[in-house]
Amino acid sequence: MSRFTRRGTRLAVVFAVGVTALAVGAVPALAAPGPWHPVAPDLTDAILHEVSAEGAGGPWAAGFTVKPRGFGPLALHWNGTMWVRTAQPMEDGRLDGITAAPGGQAWAVGSDAADHQIVQHWDNSAWRIVDGAVPDGLTGNLVTVDVSPRGTVWVGGGLVDESTGEWGQLIRTRDTDGTWRTVTLPPAADVGNIVRLVVLSDRDVYALGFTGLAHYDGVTWRREALPAQYADRSVHLYDLARHGKRLWAVGHVQDDALWRRPVVLRSDAGGPWTDVATPQETGELNGIAFGRNDVPLFVGETANQNQDINRNYVLTVDSHGRLVHDAQPAGGGNLYSADTDSRGRIWTVGVAGDPDNTYVSVPYAAYKD
Image: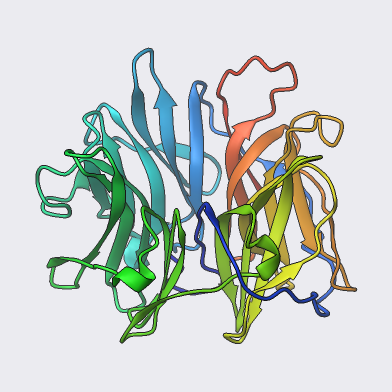
């Protein structure tokens, strides 16, 4: 997703890591004080994967509907009072990433029913599939899209080698003149199938993949090193956000006793990644957003219904720099994404709570003042 105003930028991944661990320092006081307001769309058999809230035209949410056979792409636009379902240029397929862009525009990525990568553009009136965004004949998916401050569109995901069945990375960029180009990471920085791109500028880009995190400084791509305590474990990061000079990353790590334990990492002013102590409980964090007082809010899910019957999971940072539980959105279940709009409201999307394990997918959305 894009953050052309750059309040906070996001990325996601699953990989094993290694380097330094430090303690969290003091952070501003508790997260946004206002209540959550559920604003779920009137839909069933659907899932919302991502929200992009900073566009001048209002928040966007993307995901897919669940059909008897396969999926249907889903893009919703908030009109100030309700979600409006926008017409799609393809009947079958799915959308996994979306970003608002200046001038009321938006970009979305996903795949069609034949597993071909798809890029869509909203021109302030309709969605259309962008020809030439991906070379013909490729199969795989696109799951992340971001737009740089100068208007370059970056998309990322994976492609399948038809001869071996193995997955590899795919990054494409669109210049402001409409020219698409392939970005290839050098072997030393190769992070595999891309799961998130964060484009702070065209000379400051983060690419997160199945096997690591890489950074582009305008000249060279290099791998990032993460805390050494995870060197012999598989840590799964789902989101990364930049706020001021600080980067935050969230996800989970496998735990023998808890199954999955939440992970929060931090990097200050380009320094090493450090581990922030999280509650010793079952949970995973999927999204990061920042309230009006600039304190981060982390949303996710838990498999332990003793912690929350609906399985949603929300943490924030208190005035002592500790991670603590924050208010959970009523009726929400697994929360997959979060973002902050131009008014300072935090938005989250995912699926509605399912305490009886009926596994009926009902999309969910809420915002917090």
